Image (cartoon, rainbow, N blue to C red; front, top):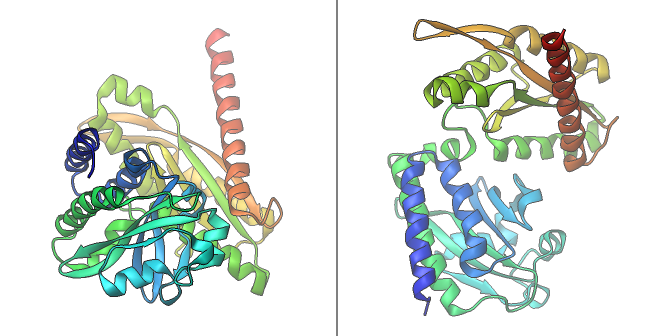
Length: 335
């Protein structure tokens, strides 16, 4: 049986989920993160069923690099869980023919519990806990995950107002801006990288950070800060093309996937277009506030054809731009 401390932790997680409200992406991210400490898992993921595939919609621990990953529903223990509606456990993935062994090896997991998530009497996804060692989980861990899965299913129920067509939209879009969230961005980036091996077309990744959001929140309050985030999101979406993916990663972080592009020249033009569109004042409740962003860019395949490296290159270049801007501002203030 679960310990009293674990049951209290479940209650605490339930309270945090209530605070997250109808932001399904935030709820799922919270649950997979807290699953790690709750049952001592090495990784956790919520997978959603979509068009015959299982999509990694929220990840933590060893699963974190695989956000947005898609697996065939018919070839995985998660897919079997969706079909049966039953809790499934694999004590050793190397000896279990039900699992997608190639995916397990890629992630580094050797044991797992897969818990069905039911929405409107239908299993639409799973909550999965992962261990790097065989036989990492016990029956008590299944009981605890069962408590969490009910909470997640209830959040899905209320967040989508019983309309199953809204479930994937809610799970893959940011609640504040309605932009794509990190999960959907990673899904599309994986598709672009995979497609490039066939058609050879380059793509661009932009990492974007708002300038001065903390100071805006501290001085004028989070209501103004949220308005600024929504305004930046709107301007980024306006400047982007229909074929591009604009996403909010959380806080003051945004990302843009540029596809197609004409090598570095096309990426540079997109960066200048975004700067031009986003930079400038916006009005909120009869007061004007200045908006600006810092942007870093990376090109596929020129900088890398590895997803994590592409994001890291763009991120480092973005912070280099931000540091240079702060240095110029400091020089102007001292001069």
